Length: 267
Image (cartoon, rainbow, N blue to C red; front, top):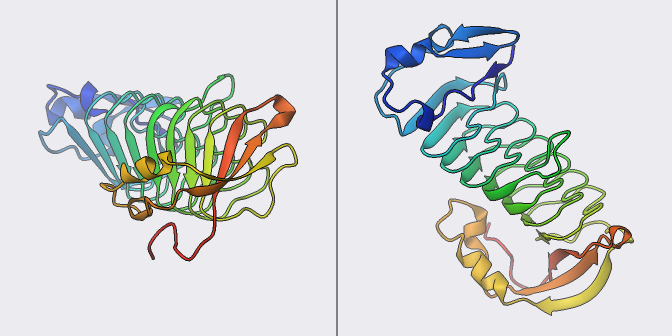
């Protein structure tokens, strides 16, 4: 059964010893159980939380996290880092749907794949991700950045259908292949692609090739990352720019690196 992990965040465990943390009650399905019934709690470092043998049943890890670090050894469930205000989360596996939904600040690192609605708004909310940065080393599902308002999502692998649908602002970069329906309903924001997509919606206008100097600055800020994005060539500034979604009077942009003899990332 799903377990709500939101009470277990470093900033909420300050000053608590292992015995007291073990007594904290978590929702598991429709009942509450003590942490000690589910986990063996050890250690005294309240700035860093390590969750070992994690699985997709552990949901809402790092929800409303303000400070500190969370490391997940295994997979994480849905709503990872939801409404996150700061701090860092690293998942050494895959994560479920709605990762980084309503995220405001901080850094989330996913070593594996991310499910649908990464950085997207949940039902009933008008905005998705609102700040911060997410790095996914694997592939992502459908509707990445749906209603995204601000922030940065970096995807080393491929993205599913309707990437950046209804996007309001922010930036998404994808090094792999794309699904269908790119930028459907996009208002503003930027989607940067390393590979030419199979097709773009007819409601996006090709404005031609442009040399954008900000891409050099943009790529340099990733030099410290353990990621393919750290190997982006700062001299690679020429892109084909597509503007839309004009069906919604949108002014969003899809930027596709122009092919040349160099590669956007190293092997």
